[in-house]
Structure formats: C-alpha cells, structure tokens
Length: 345
Image (cartoon, rainbow, N blue to C red):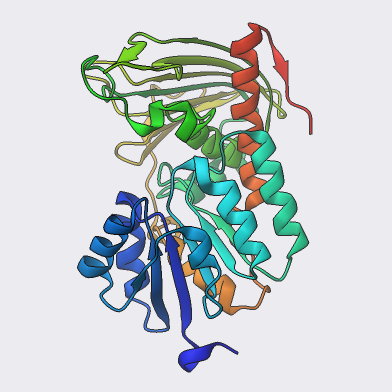
C-alpha cells in the first residue's frame, strides 16, 4: 500500500542532462507519480534542480541520506557509471525499485554484482535505460530477420563516427574519464546492445584502439579516441565495428547486415531501413508501418512494471546489461593483451 493516495514516490540520484531533458518531462505526465527528493553532485545543484523543476521535492546532501527515506518507492539513477553499482545495490537493500541510466556499470564485475543483487530481491523491479538508437524501427528489423529476408547473416559492419573529441584543447568530457566512465568507450556499449538484440550474442572479440589526444588540459586520457572491434556472433556472423570521436564531417551512424540471400542496412540518424535480395538492382527503402513503429516509452514501461507488482518485467533488464558489459569487458581485455578474447557465459 503506497502512502499518499497510492502515488509512486521517486527519489532521483544524479539529476543531469538526460534526467532533465528526457525522463523528467515523461515522469511529470503521470498524475500517480511524485518526485519527493533529489540528490545531485552537490547540495547546491540539488537545490537548484528542485527550485527549477520540482519545487515540492526536497534537495538532499548525499544519496545514502536519500535512500534512507522510508516512504520512497523508486530510486531513479541518472549518474554516470561510477555510481551505478553502489547506488543500485544499496537501493535494492533498502527495498526500493531501481531505474538505472545506461551504461550499466564501470566493468563486468560491477554488472555481476548488480544482477546478483536484483536476484536477491525478485519482488523489486529493476530496469536499465534502453538506447534510443535503432528504437524506432526495431520491430521492423526483427521481423525482416525473423522472416529470413536476407537469409543467414554472415557479415556485419557498424560505423559510429563523431567529431565530439576533435578539439585537443577542450577539457575532457566525463565519458573520457576512466574514473567516471569505467571501461565504456565511445558508443561501443550502446551499439553492442542494439546488435545483440537483433543478431544474438557476440562470443569473441579482437580490438585495436588509439588515443590521438592523450593530454587534455593537463588530464591524461586513457579512454581511446578511436576503436575497431572484430567480433564473432553465436549465429556464425563475423562483424567489424568501428567507433571514433575524432572524425571531421562524419556521416550518420549506420549498420550493414549481409546475409546469404540479401542485405539489410539501418541508418541510425534517420531511422531509415533499406534492404535488397540477390537479383535486385540495389537496396530499396523498406516502409515502416505504423503498427511496427516503436516510441520512447521508457518511463511508462518502468512504471507499469512497478504497478504490476512483478507480473511485468521491463527490458533492458540487468541480464541484458550483463550481456553487453561482457563485450565491453572483453574489448578492454583484448586491447590490454593484444589478443582474441573469447566471451564465456
């Protein structure tokens, strides 16, 4: 029985840009939701956030204090990966449902701790934030692959190039700070999550990387500026995944999937799917019927699962997260030892 007219009471830990821009507007649309407390990186920023966005919420000095509030139902984690494991495990131990921003964790060991904690409290709902990339036409891609439109997939090419880190004089972004972001590199984890949803698990990797600008305003960057990953999938396909943060005038992110009887491509910038079969003159745009179009309904999905008292389990769950963190860990191990790393499950 929830206090306060059955409202779901939320405590936010980490109220950065993604929470302000994406989650908060969607949460505010729900009359049965109340944001009651906020703990950001400093007390001043927590206060400012509450004043601007949630005047009725209480700013907290630190997150353990927030977790100790007895009448909070949900902890909404919007921090960088450095805090995900500690806050998640503590929140579950305090009897709270947990929504956690992606990437799941700093490394595989932390992801395993988070999954183990969620299994100890099966009555509590846990969910990771899904990637927006590929979401709109996700069901269309799954349908085409399930119908064997391209036959057996045998070759996958993914490119994700950006110019965010091109300026060597810029201060390092938090994603370039290993003590905040962990082993996560560029968009590796996001696209591994998308590819594994469509093609099944990756079972081995060989990775090469380069740091073009190792010193940024006196800080030594050890997260690569560019990364190339050769990988193998359980379904037999081989993949080449290329990532960069230092490419001028880069095209939009895209994936190409080549099969025994056809080809499928997805442009992540426009959500346009193209396909073609042996004998066709070229690729054609595949129409996205409205009933197959997927919208960003992350907050609704999570809240529905909480209200279902465990009957509904939202995705991506911590199992899904562990699957992509295994690949992130394997890429780090491969880079460190300059060798092929098989992914054990």
